[in-house]
Image (cartoon, rainbow, N blue to C red; front, side, top):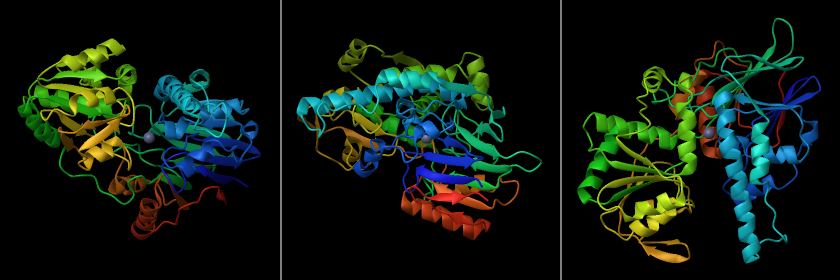
Length: 463
Ligand SMILES: [Zn+2]
């Protein structure tokens, strides 16, 4: 009897881990880190409910840390099996997992300095070196290539359109003419978004495990380019810097794509632009190295060395000195820098210098979680605490909606409708309780298929 156990991404958007057991073998689909609320983060530190040594293999849907960031810990705790992902995901992990380890080490060092941990010394969940070692174990395979993991279990990756390398994963269990097919959506991209192709059709499936991040929402219908044009035009008229706190992977590249398009069409002036994030720069290089993964127009442009991920007057800041030099630039300048919610990273230095200037515009392009500096700015905060001081906010704060890498509720239902036949059951995962429930209601109401919102550690039979 085959089973699936939900070890993460159940009732929450982080920590994705789904254990498929069949024929006495165990396959873990995604190996994500919990982020956000403390009660969830503590699960990263508790032993995994299943002994890592008993897991035979891992497949990863895409590179984001909430789907991959537990992998170094799995190795440290004795896992020895193979790990498969798409080629681009394997490449991205070589920058993402060491970076995640680096952040863990920084956090431990911070607690040791302040004496704020119960443990002395506080230790990182894993180190940057362990992150790199884990990433080096990931075998990259092509989209559509069937991979036989062991007798009776095969997997296949298809395009999910979420970030570079992202995949819908079909796990095929059993031999003979009619194997059981379990399809994992991973994170699904938006239909009609630039850069990456639309999600592949769902196809044949007995069971579907689908994400529900925006299971109860519709994205803003106003085109992103039009929103950006309006905001940038106003900001240029003010004459100061435009600071964009942005996530290094996905969001930064999509923003560059839109800005380059607006500049070419003469809808905004050519802006002096700085990407001030070593990780965003490396990620963009990985993006541009895999044109075969892009949708048609984009592929042609990159192949012609006319990469639309770089706009007109474009500069990269890798070294800290280059980053500091940006502070002295007067007049309109666009600065894109991590982190996306201004919780840390180089963007804080730019904000500290520029927030007191009423000519400055802060442009928020992603979801801003409660309690972050990004959210406080969005809420009209008059001062912001950083580096132990209160910084006055006289800058204008603008938000552009819809630069999300996730399908909205209509997009999720549209993808489910591409199933070749009604599946036996749909499991709704990777969503907070309300969106997950809302999507389940649409699956049963509009599609007439049985839907379940599994809870953490639910173990359900697949037959
Ligand atoms: Zn993701």
